[in-house]
Length: 202
Image (cartoon, rainbow, N blue to C red; front, top):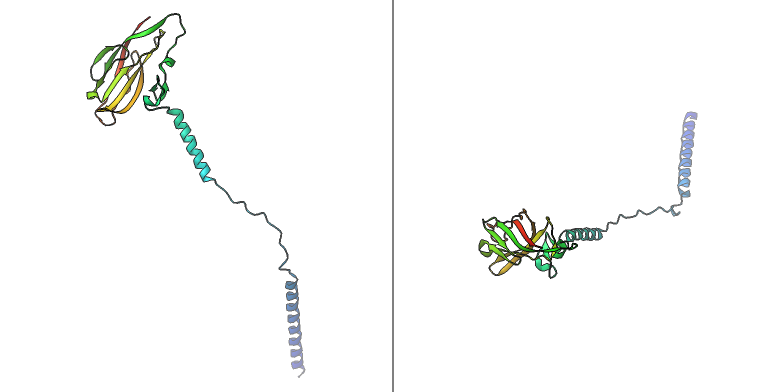
């Protein structure tokens, strides 16, 4: 009987201790204020990429670069008296020097072409090739100082019957040959010319 009482007493004590432990845990949880304000944190700054601005800047830079390299593609895009030479509008007076006592003028230019023709022509004259698909004309230079590096502007027109498909100008000095001149429609055209001599009067 005594043993039974001791067992029951032990169980009761253990139960009381267990209940006391659970009560303390509940009290500790109640002490935590779930509504207490939390410390503010710095919000993350979103990464903003202005794609439209970047694209616009790239387009502007590309356009500026192209414009810096290409001033013209046709003589008709240049002011009166100027020619489209190497994609730049150029006035013949900018090609010469006039700071001397004695000025010269071009009397004739001797030209040989890739189709086997030879010409001695004054400024203002020219000829054609490929049944008129390409025609060219020697342009006049203002009076200038005599120079061994003198270059003559020659205009080149590309035509399809009466329609002008392109017009530009090339600069050639004595002994210089033009780049091959092609035609946008007639793919068989491959024309070039060489200035053999420039005859001047001073």
